[in-house]
Image (cartoon, rainbow, N blue to C red):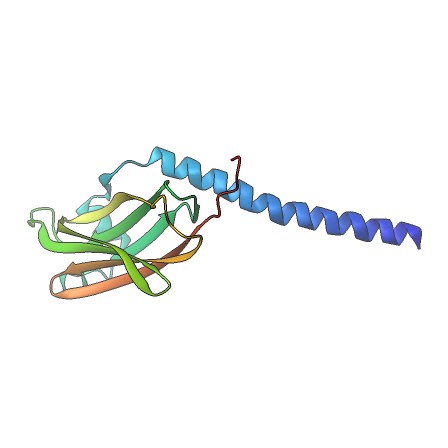
Length: 172
């Protein structure tokens, strides 16, 4: 029986270390990802590549693709979070950018505490748009919602991500 107890203890310890270690590895990965990103936009696919990659894409349902991401998902007060938007418009290369707007809103306990409205020209192709937002030094620990909306061609499309403000421990 003593051997079975030891195996159970070691298995439990390994599971504990694995789960607590995963959060640290994830935090390090997200810090690296955030460090290599810069504010602004980058074309990922040309208009021709976008039409091939998204065959059901058309001007009527643009933007055909809209994804968002927040990095890191756990942040300390006073640090920045990165909001990445990925969109695709299925216009031809000769099409002019279509005017629209990107609206970013941060909520804490269902109250808007930050809002940014940016006029934006949506271009043909697949693009990423990165913005960095500093979390207030006085931010309360807890869960926050990050609502990203694209207003484009008379339509509003929104996505919600979450992040967490960590408690700052004394001496760190």
